[in-house]
Image (cartoon, rainbow, N blue to C red; front, side, top):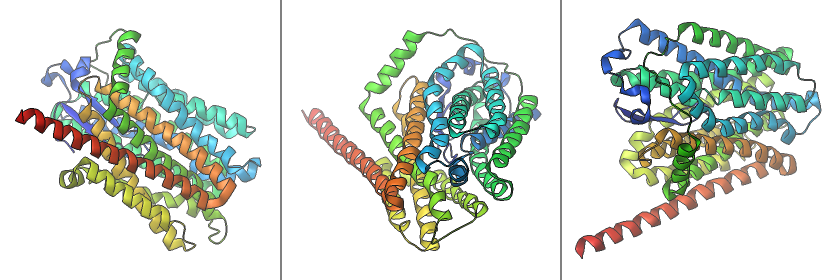
Length: 439
């Protein structure tokens, strides 16, 4: 974890949340004098931190609100696990597609404005979702909701870079990250217990009301932007920057690693509810929702990723994350509830550690246009979530939990292969440098 400086890269723990980094050197408003920005001891800093905490909590409670409810949705609407999984995949897929264009819009219309509209639209859709007459309408509304939520992560980070003094940035982003994590976890837990009592529609209505309160708090508490300077939308410049990132071999590998890790995570947590409500476990819906408390393990493992990298190097940390995730997947095959929970703990720890390493490496690797580099990582990450959820549910429908685990192992093998290739490339590069130095 870097110290509070003008450039920071911080993994977002959501369950999963985007990885967001910012580069104050590419943010127009961040060139404002330091004394014109919010100080950590001021009332404005506390208001801003609380507002963004509320926004993060609302956004990610909404984004994954149906994940813990998939068995109940399948039973009530008479659809398969694969069909129900699209209520999650549609939201994360739409977020992946819209995060880059909406981050560009925030440069023109303002961070605060875009965040406000994003949350307002997402909450309005959330209030309609419990009324969806069938799974088709439910999926369509979730896609609109995911697209709306895409306007929040990059805009929030850019807002902080422009409005907060450098020494307070880590603390401010940390609170936003905490809102992401708590929202993603609490949304699943709340829906699980409410669904057990009153059904999945009431559960989604409860999350919508919680998000509405958070959105109102956000709008009332967030200070007006004082340092934002609107820019012009230049598609050619944006395309050139994005093209440059996609042409970078290391960035491509990091995007692929993020997508593959999230494929595993999306598959496991989309399907685990189906497994736990069936024999031999037969757990009630509320208990299944509480399983998402395991996410707290991810908070710890992602926070410790920096120390792990310092000891083992980036690729060493990735190898350890791959090994931990693999052991967790194999443990989850157990017919013992203790074995399954132990497997989930290891899968979660391995995933978040790998995600933290890959996401922070993106900011370190990109020498310019870091906001766009981060947005591309978010796109790959959420596409992995969307693909993993759908393929994991399809595999479960075809071959049970064993098939879902096989999919996860295949994705983890992909991460291992990419990391091995990166290790080989680094060795070749070092040898070439030695030859040049000695010639």
